[in-house]
Image (cartoon, rainbow, N blue to C red; front, side, top):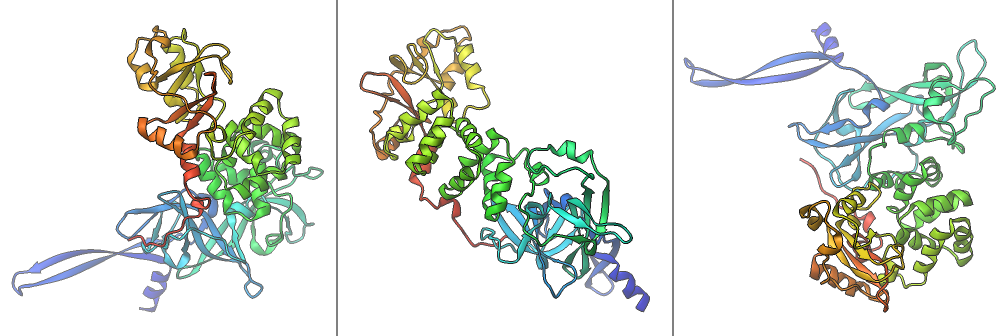
Length: 467
């Protein structure tokens, strides 16, 4: 019996039950067959990220995004206290390790009870992927001089029922005479350099220290195909210093998309942390209305400093938008809707609509104007809906397919006036024109919704359970 119990401690035991009826007794019995399978007690965090979490009946609860650990002077090994799980609706929640019944490199099984309150990092908690990956530490191997290394993965091990601790750290040596560049050096180039080692946690110093020049390559590697709104959600959860580090590591276009999704205070913080020239490049990559909103949150001196660093044409668009009140059509509009002359063909219009950088709301219609086609344009003639373009022959001039029944709003129109017009005509975007009929821009439905929602709509919290 003692030997059997020792074996059970080293394996996961699952039961397969079936109901058997014995005619001669008129009784039914539940027969349970025990299946003993090996239990993997060491899991690398990088392999956990992106795994699905299931409840006991096989329904998916969410996807793992990070592991939370806590350091303690009383414990030799940092303890993994829970997982950050992304549930439907882009909400990131905390799942304690006590609710994880099975975890390996293929899937995670939970008890099914999940508190869907939005995850908030508490004092003393450390996010492994977001805060420890890419960190430069000091490694000390027996009989060797200490050396600098970069953390690329961390292994957690199960020490007892539902209790996991950090046991191993996978690092890459920083080449002698080399300097970790942080944001400038590409991940692929860095990975071709330096020896990799799997070290005990006791052989690594610097895990608890605040990393001032920490990179973000490994963290962002898991977010290559993630929408900007989801990436912004992850960045919001980070501590201020780490938030700036991660945002700074993004390419200009991606950072521009993320800034458009962040709350006001966070995006001002990120923009202010960038060099002047880089901040100007990011502002140029943003949608003009979003860039104007961001500049509107700065002091007049800061606004002017960034505008002087931008390309003259881009700066001029923003200067025009900053003139309007925030909650008017002029303050809400973008100066870069899809604009074509009436002689352009349907094929040309569809080619413009297909461009990846065009937001979906603005791709719903093409605005037709006389030259010039940059705002403020020549005389506004009307618009062509995307569906109408699909019904017309490719060689048809779009001037023959105009919808002239949608009157443009004036730039001083209130938010409620714009909302009523959008709702009345079921439009995704409304033209904005001056009193002389020159198109100034377009107000899209997503910008209107963003203004109608309360300022803290991204912080909305609900407590419910799964299962």
